[in-house]
Amino acid sequence: MNLVFGSDHAGYDLKQHLLQYAQSKGYTCLDVGTETAADACSYVDYGVKAAQVVHKGEADLGIIACGTGIGISIAANKSPGIRCALCTNEYMARMARQHNNANMLALGGRVIGFRLAESILDAFLAQSFETGGRHQKRVDELNRLQPGD
Image (cartoon, rainbow, N blue to C red; front, side, top):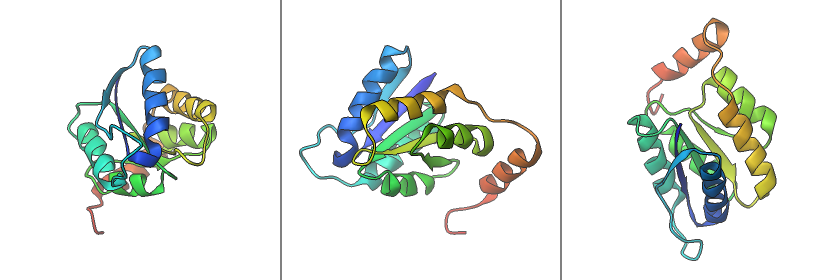
């Protein structure tokens, strides 16, 4: 499975940790930046960069981080075909994949620790979408929405 990682300066340390963690588990990982926690940068740029990689099919799933995960998840969700879920626990991560077919995971580098983030990532990656039924209907509705609707 191919993963793309992106973050702003506030999510940099968490992104770096999770990227190395995912690589150690055998995932192929692409890092779209940022390259340092020292220089402030916009979460919008890196949320969109990662989302574009997922949208183009160059990665199966995306993992992004900013200080809280809120801003970068909003930015990613502005991209076509993206269903980015901000998750703060394993249950949310499982449900995001199973019920919402989330293709990106957002995390907050200033609000969760590395071990919890690893566990959330594991839960997200271990699940797949429960196709059919009411969940498929809702995801189809989401997919029909256009930016600005």
